[in-house]
Image 1: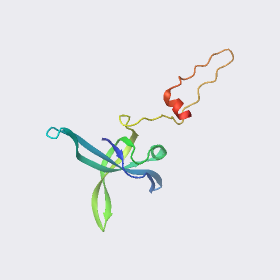
Image 2: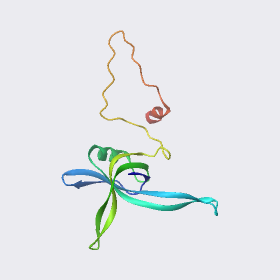
Image 3: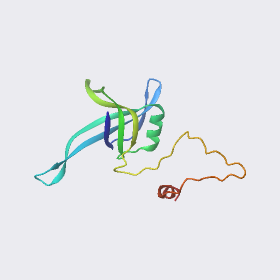
Image 4: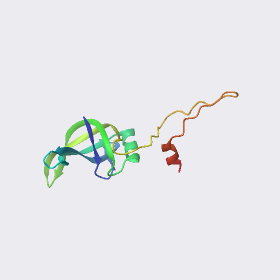
Length: 140
C-alpha cells in the first residue's frame, strides 16, 4: 500500500526484539472540491503508525522531521495498543520505502555506500558532475 501524507509526530527509535527501528505517525488527508462552497475542503483521513526497519530506519531517522510531507510504501496491518486495559486495532504500516513528497517540498539526495569515481591516470581528463542550484545552496 502507498500512503501520501505528513509526519505528525516526532521520530523515535524503539527496540523490537533485538532490532532497533524508527517509528513515527503520519496523517493522510483527502481533500475534495465542494461545488456549493466553491472551495477545497478536508475529507476523510487516515492516521497510521509507520515502522521502519534496519538501514531504512537509520536513513529515515536522519532525514525526516515532524511536519515533513512524505510518501510511504509498505505493508498495512492492524497492530494493538492497550489503553486503560483495552486492546484495539491500530493501523500500522511496515515501511518498505519512504521518501519526501516532492510535490510539496524539495530535497537534496545524498547516496550512501556509493563507490568513489575512478581516479584519472596521467594524461586522462576527468569529467565532473554539473554544478546545480541545489548543490550551490547546500554549499552556502
